[in-house]
Structures are given as C-alpha cells and as structure tokens.
Amino acid sequence: MADTLFYCPDIRQNQILPEQESLHCIKVLRLREGDLLTITDGKGFFYDCRLLDPHPKRSTFTILRQWKKLGKRGFGVHIAFGPTKQMDRNEWFVEKATEIGADRLTPITANFSERREIKRERLEKIAVAAMKQSQQAHLPDIEEMVRLKDFITRPFTGRKFIAHCHDLPKSALAETYRKGEDALVLIGPEGDFSEEEVVYALRNGYEPISLGETRLRTETACLVALHTLHLINAITTK
Amino acid sequence: MADTLFYCPDIRQNQILPEQESLHCIKVLRLREGDLLTITDGKGFFYDCRLLDPHPKRSTFTILRQWKKLGKRGFGVHIAFGPTKQMDRNEWFVEKATEIGADRLTPITANFSERREIKRERLEKIAVAAMKQSQQAHLPDIEEMVRLKDFITRPFTGRKFIAHCHDLPKSALAETYRKGEDALVLIGPEGDFSEEEVVYALRNGYEPISLGETRLRTETACLVALHTLHLINAITTK
Image (cartoon, rainbow over all chains, first blue to last red):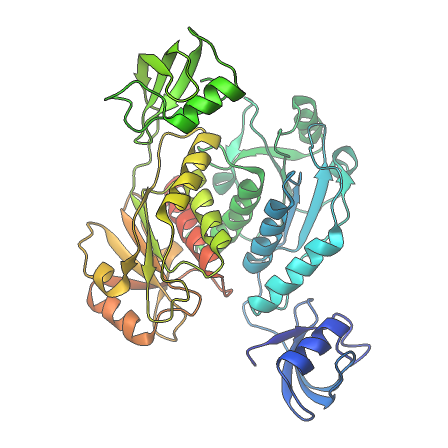
C-alpha cells in the first residue's frame, strides 16, 4: 500500500477523486499520469488505482484491484453520546474512535445537555482524516443529532448498554460484555442522564453499566467504552 | 466529599492553600471562615478541612480528618513516550492518563523524535486539573524529558514493554500482561523507534508488544496501552 491513502466514497460509480483529494494528490504530492495510488471507499475496501488524468480539482483514475484487509472485526460497535460543550473534546473522540474502530457514532441531546447542536460535516471531516492517517478502510457512520427519548426506542439487534453515575445497580462493562456481541453503548452528557432518563432506557432494554472506579469525562468514557469492547474481543481466553 | 476538590501537595507541613487554589476558593467559590473543604495531597489521601482564615492568596485551614478511597489499584503503571510535535496531543494524553490512572509519565527523546523539549510545568498543571476534576487523590509523577538510551538502562521492578511498528516478533499486550503486575510501557514518537533502538531495548529486558490491529497515533497508543493494563486488572476471570 502506498503511504498516502485517498478517500473516494463513490469510487464504484465514478473514478474521479473529490476536489480536496485531487488537490492533495496533484499539488502537494505532485503525482503524475500513470502513478499508482491507493484509495478507500470508507466501507471496508481498498483499491489500487492508476492515475489517468491529473487535475487539481477532478483527477481521474482507473481501478486495478480491489482488496480488503484480513481479520475484519467480528463485532459491531455503536456509541451514542451527549456531546460536550467544548467542541474540541467531541472532535478528539471522533478521531480516536475512528483510529480504534467504530461502526456508528450518534450525538444525542438529553435533559442536562449543554450542547444541543453539532456540525456533523466537521466531525465527518475529522473522521476521514483519521481514517486516512491510520490507513484504514472503515469510516464510522456519523449520524445527525437525535433526541435521547427518540433514540432509546430505536431498534438495535445486539446488546444495549447505558453508562451513568446514579447510585443504581450496574455491572462493569468489561465483565458483562462477551466477545463477538454487537454492542450499543449510550454515554451521557457532562451533566449525566437524569434518573428518569436512565429508568426509561432500562425499560427499553438497556443494561446499566459502569466503566471503572474513577469518574471520567464524557469523551473519556466514550473512548474507554469503545476500547473495552475491542479489548474483550482481542483477548482469546475470554 | 464536597463538589470541589482542592490540591495542596504539602498539606502535612503547612495548612495553607497555594495561591491559585486560594484564589479559586475565595474569589470564585466565595467560601468563608468555618466552611468545609476537601483537599488532596496528590499522593493518595483526601483531607476534610475547615477554613480558618479566607485570604485570596494564602488561605489557612485546619485538618479535621484524613482518609483514603477503598479499592486502591493493585498494580503500578509507568508510561514512557515520545511526545508528539503538536503539544495539545501530549496535553490531551496527560489529562486522560490522570483520569484513568497512572503512576508515572516520562517524556523521552529518540532518534526520530520531532519534539525534543517539553514544558513539564504545563503538563503538571493539566494533570492537577484532571485529578481535581475526576475527584481523585493520585497525581501522576511527570518526569523531565530523558534520552531514550539513558531511560532504557534504568532499573524497573516489574515487566517492561516496548510498542513498535517494525516487522519483528511481538505479543499482544492484552495477552501477555497478567493482572497485578507492575508494568512500564515504552511508546515511540510519531516516526516510531529505529530498529536499532528496539533491539537495544530488547537487550535490556524489554518485551516487544503490539496494541491491536490498527495503526495508532502516538498519543492514542499511550492511552490504549494504559487502558489495556487497567482493563486486564478489572476482569476478574483472567
């Protein structure tokens, strides 16, 4: 694989690099007609390609070979979270989640949310950069913001967990989660979920969890939950 | 415990709040003579105290009670890392490491390091803020920058691991590490360690490890290593 990975979500329809990618390819890396490049569709595939017409806005190329990395993750991960007020903390989480691996990220608004809107396009851009940087072919699906109450009743085939700080019975995620299970983890905003919201989630099939002994910031909790799922899957003895 | 946690490293010697803490206590929270406050020494202890003389620069107090949280971590964690060029990524790691829990953090310089100096005081400030925010009493010991070659030959009682990207045999950290062991993990700079540096570490008792299937940024690798150790210790079945 070449050092630079390009992103072209519609590669199967059109063999044209998007504007930003063309610019980088032609003006920064100065690739020329006939040069080889590796492109991903963000859906799990890599493509070895040959540059046909170098153009700073719409370079065309031809696909030589389509391939996948071996050892694809055997479990699905969906993290839904109350975004923090400071936007860089959300961006940071999206970057790390893309590096480590996640299928879907959903920003939600709850009673105590301090942030009630989010620029999805900005988060997507960060995810694309992180995917390219870590040489992966999987882009997490970043959803539009959803109200918690609407989100909770959505169907999900797999185990649904809710992390919260209320003094109610809960299990450690690392103990209750089992290898290979698809999981959805719901993490509250900085002010946590209200007790009413937690109860509503429990009534809708969510299992209450804790993520360790220390009090974590929202974005740290998101990352710890995500990495816990990965690690349980990586440990062969469990 | 009160909502705000204050930090006073020399509390056993002098019952005087440091300047920044006094300012916050008196000017922001407007505490008065006789009010209760919780203070930590960053060495594992909390202190319930009563404010004697409110002063914006040097408030005095009296200690009512000294206490510890139950369930102290049964393993030691030391992360040594090549700091990234972008300073906010290093700061971010120090914040997260403090939240999750680490005993010692050592910035190192290696052959391919892009950053060869670091403001220790700035990192310490971030660690103090993170400790207070997560209501913990443990401040990681942040060391001055050390040259890799000098660091590698230092004695350490516990297992020493080196994470690198070279094509040499290695084990997954999650598989080889065992609950309760003290661990030191060495993570390279953005340009990784040179092969010569890796070999030198292996000759000095370091075990080569990988942290998963995806290519991680330096600061993500640091966090993933730290959380892996915590999680293996949290899983009772292992």
